[in-house]
Length: 121
Image (cartoon, rainbow, N blue to C red; front, side, top):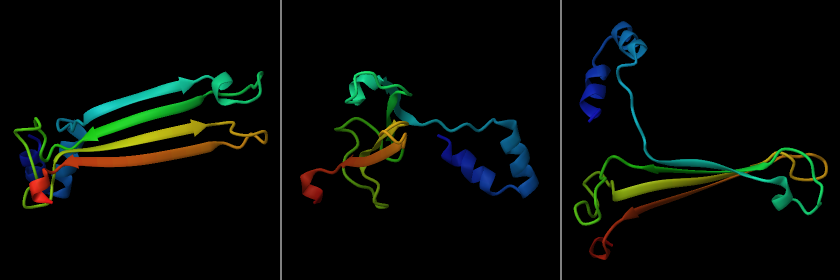
């Protein structure tokens, strides 16, 4: 739905584009899911009385708008290579006090998927 507006914006002068952006009338949204969980220190540490900040686990999933739809209404790939029901999922773990030297640990894992029936492979 926002594609025609973005095309219109690309034909504006720099000043007009700046004024349009400053008005905040064009707002993009992301279809997906985000959740952050706090994992207590007692579950992540071998020491019974460990102090410090808790570990955080964050899950972010983004669904592409290019070929979204139900499984049977949007299938395969288009001419530009966009697959149906493309989803990118990222898992982020952050532990501010990973070891005894108070070194932090950050980890991110990204997984992508899309639906292509076997007749296209």
